[in-house]
Image (cartoon, rainbow, N blue to C red):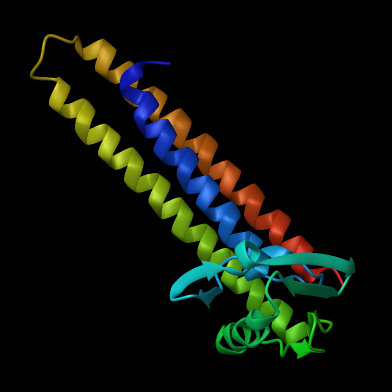
Length: 183
């Protein structure tokens, strides 16, 4: 692969990785500790991820157990979860916080599926924008000493990369939607 294209391939890789990370935060009926990734806790004045200040376990399919390393953090973690858009109320027994994930309703599953599709479409737009940037960069090469054939070849390679990543996004959308809709 031409080194001029590697930069754009890396950007497309990051777009896919970002989508995978976003999908990890969408809960699909099963307890997934990644739903806590975007929740910050005030730890001595510093916003910190919950997994940086507590041990997170999934003892059952629909239960997450959070055990802070410092008991004083129980209230902070509980407050942060309540303020998040997780939609689950934590139970605190003085030592650990438990999050019980209810079964998703059919309506909520459809809502989440729409969200998955929207995030996927956003990723496709990002990939296409990277392609546009790459093609613009190739057009600028026309004034240099690179042949028209070489530029056409580079543009073709960029298009193949774009098609590959769009297909990858479609597969991720389908996979996550299937996971959400499975009861």
